[in-house]
Image (cartoon, rainbow, N blue to C red; front, side, top):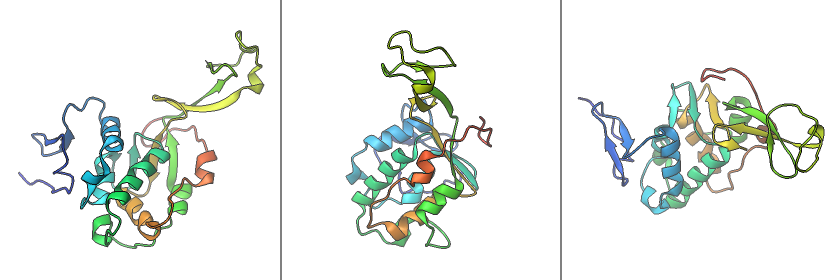
Length: 202
């Protein structure tokens, strides 16, 4: 059986299944478990790993459309920890192929989207209201004065992150030219909430 080698194989708590897939021991919620594991992992353990290996391991989809069960802010947290562990990483450690000058902001504004997303209104007493009403019965705040809140299965202010026409290697390529600078969420991406059917479902 042919196994694709991964620079992550030496991380603690990972095993290969019978098909050769690299899994987290005790994995129950799939990719979200992997994302949580990665966010909690000691950054020092990622020394000498490959960034695109890491980004590919925690995503689903194809080579041209991928999804992470996290927000862009969480993905940035993961990337930042990897950069902290590999401050002098050369191009090979980023693991991308092709043009190394992908623009970080342009990538997320033009190709990134928030999926599995729905909206709620949150009143002053922090109750989420599911449909139009005459106001909160507890605090009295009117529907149109409430805060708009995007939600996903993980609750308020969360979403699944999709990147269309690109993969984890594209993200690594976008990190490459700004690796010594602060990586931030593009403001246009932050404020753009899309509610639509996609290749991953609504």
